[in-house]
Length: 450
Image (cartoon, rainbow, N blue to C red; front, side):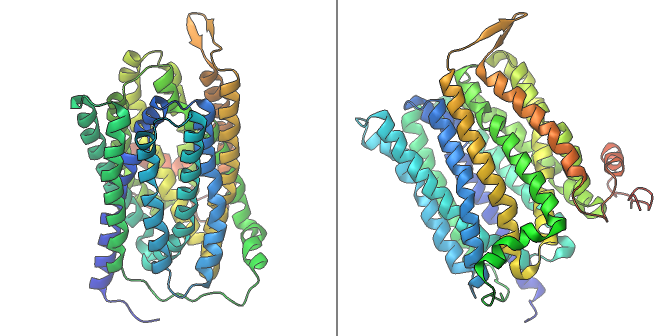
């Protein structure tokens, strides 16, 4: 394998971070509470929201297609760039179709939009396998967790800045959301396409395609791997629990709390700041303690997110409760991202790494997508139902959130049995998190459970 020049590697790693920041501009302008407000304004109901989120998650099945293609390509960069440019351009008709054809019946309009969203995610997931395989070869493993932590921090700060800018636009604009959102999407798509074009300058290490193995052998290898199988089971349960409740928190904010779009976007700043403030720390913690204790600690606290929304009985109360909740949840999400990426890339064999990553995300995403679609259907069936209990208004959303909380708690014992014998005990991780020392101490043998 040819040796890469240090300067060339540094340049490539820097460009990957810059591209990630542009991706956050794209993501902030096309998704989140802003998109929820837009779709609600054009007539989408709970069933439509469930389908949109469900099909997005179910399309992770295309990761397996991407993994098979990635394992057989000599060069992954061209396919990755084509898939991502097309997928991002698809958001233009999604945003502008209601303006172009306002006379379309809502079922036809939402049917077309949901189909385009499905294609968007299908192409994204196919291309993401090329990208993850490529990045696994590009980023040296000795700095993997540290680098992803810094990258996540840059992305989160960008997201916070975008949220502030979008909130200002929404606050000072007199135009309806059905006009403002398409313009923001156009800006986001321009940033998203630029993000992909930057990869022309990113080095692609030599790739050794696997063409002498049957497709079924590649597909089933992650499941046959006993150590990796526990991680797959854990991820599946986690995705389902997240799909049941997390997909509907901003729908709840729009429909029950009646929060304005700019208010929701401003709240997202706290989420981004939480990720940014913790990204570098999570990378160091993962290098010192491994990934398993991070999963355990983060999942034990993830239910605070849903408790915060359940405790918000009005938009006025939400502005006091949710900033701290979103700050904490952002930090926890940062930990989960670092742990997930690090575990997948370090625990998967290089020759079939795309399929191992696809299995962890694909199988889980299918389960999460089905759970979200069924939850959306259920919410639509009992729409309008509510009951007052000791002065507290309970809606179908509260039932969904409560179910998700119980399922999230069930993920914690599953995380404890993930195969990572060299990892620390969660107590050692909590000790370092509590002290927040700049130079994290090295875990002792007893703390590692050896």
